[in-house]
Image (tube, rainbow, N blue to C red):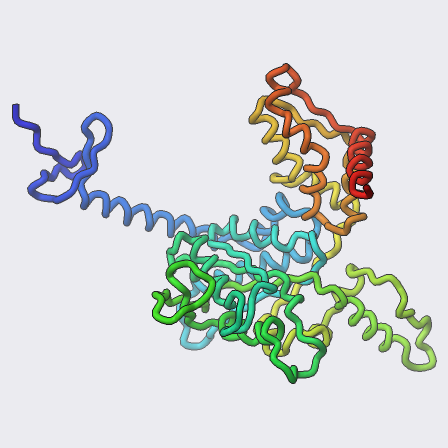
Length: 410
């Protein structure tokens, strides 16, 4: 019996009319041409869906951020407006009269206040590739360490090496304050991990064509294959805790308010600095004194300051967001057929520990793990033995913290 000649279930072409077939269940067949057409249709649909996201209003972006980020309303408003303006600029028709320039962003705020979370959430809302780089790992080209362009490799990875899509992504470079030069004057010696890195960043963030290693490495080598990457439409956001910047601002404000006969109370230099009071008063001159070079600041026109989270906000971070750490662990327990319950009085102990450690919201996960780590280790065995409910109150949590602290002291 002759084998039936394969026929495409979509277009009806035979093997004589097209080369390759893919066989599905119940003898369904699809030919090479139909696969190519389908692939093109899906890509176009994805582009359409993605472009629809760019039409979101700042208020719509802000409202979505509200579901994930507690507090920081001013920062959320600024980011919602500026991110929308950035992508509006990319998709705007070419004009002979107006050339809209890119507005990169500087985020100033203490550790654990939500800088990274806000950017991750915005990238998720807009469905664009997102990459994080740590400025402390960068060195000036030609020295041991990562080139500044290595963050572009991370963006390519996030977009599955779709160069066109990566070129419209968002890059967050954290710890930018850690590469400040020492003082406002120009360096007299080579500073390959400080001012030298700032200089190396200038061309990339302004918008230029960079050569990125095609093999995914973070260093360039002679004769290696590279990919051309245009950074013109990449949004660069810089963040840092800027420890010591509040003191610079306080001194400037104190000096200016203590001049003349009616100056009133002179601020003591020994006053405890509250970053929430001083960061919103930051000026370009303050940042230059801190050690950020003027050329870099000129390419980051938008600046937003974030507040240090207080106890009430940290408690809300634990409970309210869609992806709060408590909800994540509760879902993990549910997957094993168990329930994880934190009583209302337990949150104060968790928040107090976070404040004492000065870790902000970022440190809440490690503190929760201290509490439930043993329960997770024995979870499967306990569920098999019929123990399916794990309840933590303030007294139980305080006892766990005391045991951990006593071990550390020993």
